[in-house]
Length: 232
Image 1: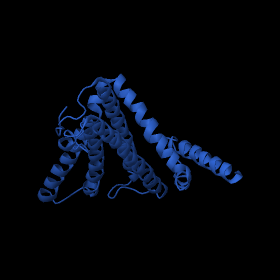
Image 2 (image 1 turned 60 degrees about the vertical axis):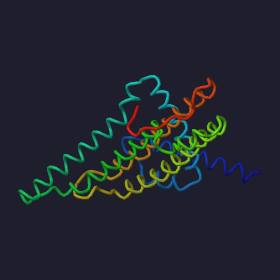
Image 3 (image 1 turned 90 degrees about the vertical axis):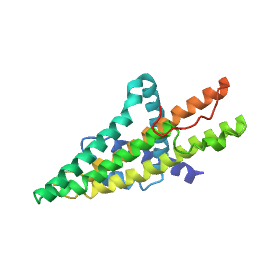
Image 4 (image 1 turned 180 degrees about the vertical axis):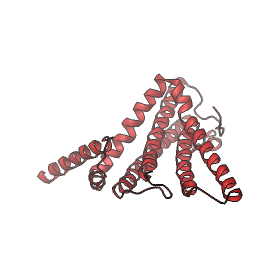
């Protein structure tokens, strides 16, 4: 009994350390954060971040529809345009002027990371991932609803795994002062921090879908609709 209590106290102590280190924006202590992320409290922190963070952002989306409509598309388009501009300019500089910025082959990769995972969040809202709509539309109403609930659980599980592991990678990069190749003062952890943030956004989209599914089930509206990639 005493061991169980001590274990619980340790987990909550580790949770407090992780929260404190994650939200130390000015000078994050990556050594402490990396050490805390190796403890048992990391999964509790990841669960709280996934569910509470996603729920709060879902409420923000409901309160400010303009953010809900434009956040991920803006990030995707800006990232895509920056990638295209860097590649376009650097191809000309390389073959015409025989020179090239050293970071031109590394920065686009990190921008692609941002574009990919914010795009994943956006398309979860559009239900173009894990939809199986043609198969599910032929099922009775209750199994349809059960599978939609299963979708939410699976997405939250994926968010939990990515948030925990990506934060660990970010902490390791920050602790080792990893610099983006070809630059002098651009840290890798700046880009890696966008990965757990993207999956908190994805969790918010899962909450939005869940609210819609529950409302549709209660009001007798269709549960399964044909998903369209890039649709609204």
